[in-house]
Image (cartoon, rainbow, N blue to C red; front, top):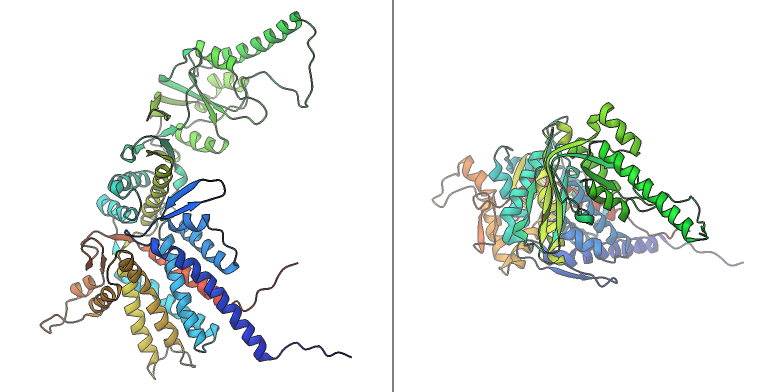
Length: 562
């Protein structure tokens, strides 16, 4: 009888280690792919797909979302970048770079014989201290200080293709977020209340903030219909102004010309009756929602509404209805009879504006602008529209992504009102403080150290991994990374002046703000240089990267499902 062998413990241990190493190397390769895109001097990636569309960007979340990733652990880094984009909106490249550096550090420790659980535990000790360190070096933000908010958004835009227009876009983003922010029950800004309208063909500096509603739709010009309307009474309709169709596919055979004439006449009378009822309701601007059953409005309906002096805006999407209702303080109408009855019984279902007009932003693009909305200052009506322009499709898409990042940075400052210095200053300070923590844990009388005494090794590796951010910033800028890092470490650890005197608390606090200044090709005080970023961005990046790395460290096998 044959004997079945399940393998020795050494074989299983070797297999688990090889799988762990394979997982880490796969994730590290993703980090290496986008590491060169970090910082204001980071390189762009050209992404080409099977659809022959080309995207040029250095946005980490966009690059990773377009990559074809097969390995499960590599996909975890893609999902982590998406989570950073949802939580903070910025730092999508930094979070992957930090995760890659932590995995490289963990890989070296595992190769030296440390158990993955020991490495994971020590990384947990380090991240538990990180939040306090970051908060202690942060600067409080007053939302009334618009300049500080704008500067934080400018920092996030400095690495984008639209960096030449960074200040203009940052000002628009800050004004938009401050217009829709909520202070209760928790400070937040719902970005769904900001509608971004893309307009192709106009320069980037034509981007504009519109207090109220704007729609990237064209107004019907059949029969020279109106393209602007003063003292507008707006009705959002969900019924069709077109001949009805049967529920099933049927064929109607018309025997002679008289029957054809009667059929056409009945359709014409049906359309005219609806158009007259619309006019009777008093609405002079009609927003028509798309229909999946038949044409929402046909050519005959456009003709008669234009003849009655009603302005028609077509193709309103279903997901736009809530935003339009919130912006115009109106409610949709499901039937034409309801529209007529609402004139007397429910006038609040209509929207009222001083002016509705079609604006031509370029030779190929236009949008509909609503100004002077009645009751626009109500709490439930705090919505704004942001006009996003670009001379070509590539630039337009990059401008849209940059505006999204800038809006998220402003929102992050509303949620957690604190700023950190940029240029790798926060990561350098974390590294210096965690190295000090590792030395304290190494002391024989330390109460916080684990009995096995291995935590200081992992904490020190964690601290060294964080230095990858300033190192990469300097490397991508063409500077000497080792020289920059040496100067930064010395500045952050400095406690005495050149003449041997102890530094004051103010000077010690200022030293924490030194980072890699790309403008001067040296280290400098990033707060004085106005290179700042929200606390939430860095805190979220470090936390998400650590959680993902610890999760990868606990995987010792990959099992195929049925």
